[in-house]
Image (cartoon, rainbow, N blue to C red; front, side):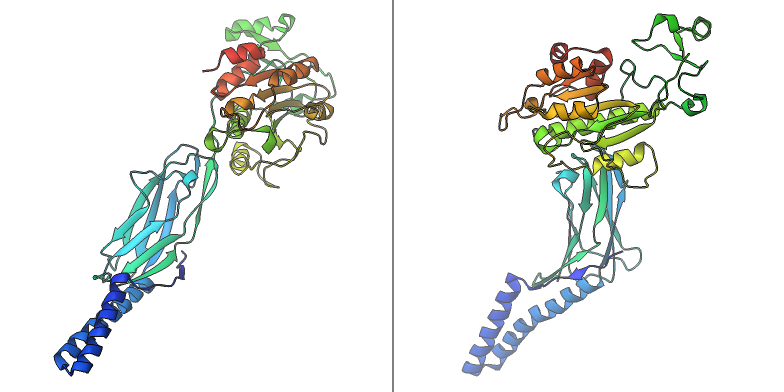
Length: 419
């Protein structure tokens, strides 16, 4: 609990006017030698001074604490904030206002502003208000501003209380289906290490048939047992799992706030990571510079990746050049707008192909404030280099983009599927 630091306060406009009126009355009473009028003037002067003492006492006596339930939520979910006030009795009113950023989504029908007239000695008072975050990120809630006034509102003292609390808003995760051809086939799946006794060693494991598998590898006995096509893993090459790359370069994205192309890319990346991890694939998340956004030493898994994506910020990096990517493993890249010469840097880092989602960033900037290159030439270049590519346009849901990638749809069919 944080008790807060005091702020300057004092008489309100009403209190200052009353003090000035009492002083003027007293002066006039002395000049006119009117003792009764002097008593009235002194009494009027003492009222705001007494109110000042009462308001100052209430400010020092009140203690505040805040709790968030929950403290870690996906974007668009509901959060309940509870503020607990304790202290001595109030002689006037206590106005409470919490500090909430717009991205944390304070509900207009229930703003975080309250007035407390009574503060029980035992248990205090609990007041709550809802939040519905509209943008991922690490949002700071607080500090709490309390204003203590006397019954006549002649004096007022403000104070910051309850410190700040962190609300971690995760990117939206959409359920995906299937895998692109040749992605994750025998690479880094559970049991891969146990089955690996040298490159090309036999393996009698079977798995479900995926688009692109050769029919000669169908294991008919297992197919009859499971009543669905099963493929024999006769040879499992040893690869290093799946790397998911997120292009967070500021110049590669358009739009602002929740409707920007960067937020779409982050949500798609989070959905891909969640989908692959739930299928048992080892996943490594990296940004365009090849570094992992997760904290060093973080426990592997989906939660650290979502936490890292929640706090992700745009990068000023100009291009996609850097160290080699996913040597010996699969790569899924979520890329923003690619200008002239930027694609070559990515191809140099990954010469053996991969899977990519290209964002048609111009759709996220309908006003055309900043020109964005057409993704079609970059998609064609990637396909010639052996990549499997899908183009995402504004208005498409992440699961539909993933379906285009798994089916190998061309950019024209992708644009035709815009909802």
